[in-house]
Image (cartoon, rainbow, N blue to C red; front, side, top):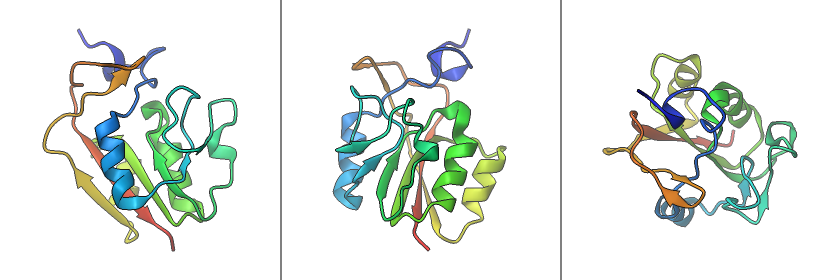
Length: 143
């Protein structure tokens, strides 16, 4: 039986990015905004929580790291493509059958990087078993 991030539910959107992954991407891109965070898991000095609703905030000029709630991937992909960011890097599941994936794949400003192995996400600071899907990072560069 699938549990956690593999199925919809109260915990399905609460997984934290592993530190090693964020550090590697941050070394390359120099992020200054985490619009999908909690106070405990924020990766950048400037961040928005669910109360702030990062989708309603202005990201103009930001270099954003985005590990969105996967149940709302479409909205976060749309925001990353529409905001006037310098750069946005979205950590997403590989779901080639979704419209948001096609929007990324067909956009010239986007580079998609696939991981060779499954990422072990964190929950409450503890590393979990691998999910039943692989992940990608979509890098959206400003217009």
